Image: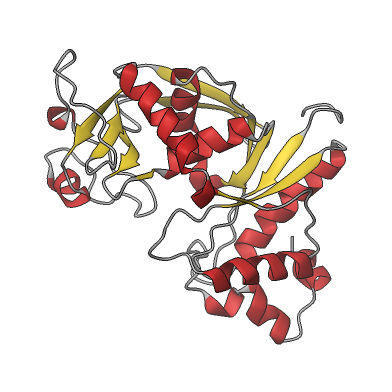
Length: 275
């Protein structure tokens, strides 16, 4: 863990619904690690999903986080106000020939021979190599606004490694465990992977604390940090909170939303006791 004078962590909720107990556990872990290092904790509003993000959820998430005992330094940073930064980053990737346009849909990818049909809906399915343009193919300009999906070409066969603060040494093979991934979407917005990398670097984040379901995203992001000439933070992936069937909590689990738990008389202390 970084020293007390340099540790910077972040809370990064997405206002697409009410925060649930799983979010609270991850954010509480982030706060504890920041406090243990004598560091700083920032709040980032990951509000790039224009179709699902709503102002009332932004207000609710701040209120619920404060009720739970979460505290951060400085004003909230909203990704929707930082599009120019992401555009500069994708332009740099384009200039380096690291990305290519893609007109294939998720359905196309899942239907392709060899693509995993049981892929996690929250993760990208493995992109078939046969859909990828050959190295050296002419690269069209990056239009503004962008009307095509753009993918990052992963280095097939390269083993990537990082040391997780909870899970220890983690490895993944590019091209086998994950394939070419989206960095810019045809709705003229950056992907989660690109926006996260740009912001974590710009905010000076030294450790990312998030759920274990995002561990594979870490390998993708390490490739983007490298391609953009940025220093990656450390990573700590928390265990997931599941429902009574063992399924990972989602924002559709209204009964376990912090707001509903509070209205039913639960206290932050009683919720944390089970951890």
